[in-house]
Length: 239
Image (cartoon, rainbow, N blue to C red):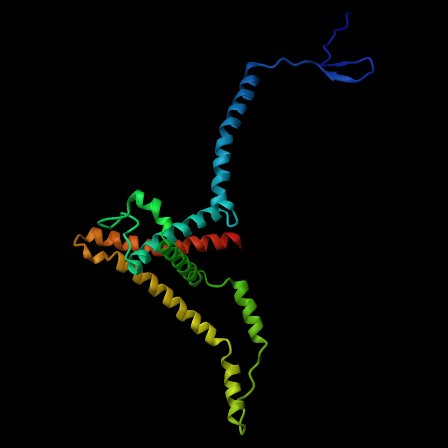
């Protein structure tokens, strides 16, 4: 009876090693590989856009620093316009809610005017000081200051001693409070200065149309807050 020969799926080499036989790829396999390539090509720009946006959303992303810096300098420049008009009687730098402005040609010669740079420096100082009031202290900073202050215990008020002793006891009790109070007064000064220059240069209630009044109010608030928020974002991105 003849023995039936079955095909061997593997072949052997002269050294006795087994090698797989060549398998013919079907059209479905080729289509699957081609589809995978197409998907990978499509995923390249999508992945790039996702990574690009992540830089603006991540706390320490470089994009967030760029966004904060742009916000700070745009807000500073918008605030400079109010100082420029109020204190130096300059022609408005921007056309919004103004009857006239310096125009594009005026921007070419504006950097040659030293009063512009003085206005810009004052505006930048105001934005940074106002941003500190918005930012506040981190829990770590507050805890560190608390731990440092807690180690100073106050003895009882001295009795039957000279006035100098009681005066020094009072100074010891109130030490550090003057700086806190002066810092608050300084913040109120900068905010008041910014509000005054902004609304004096663009008084929203000169309009009779309610829509124009609301729009001018929103523009004024935006010019005051843009620099502070930009500095706030930039500072947090550095931490």
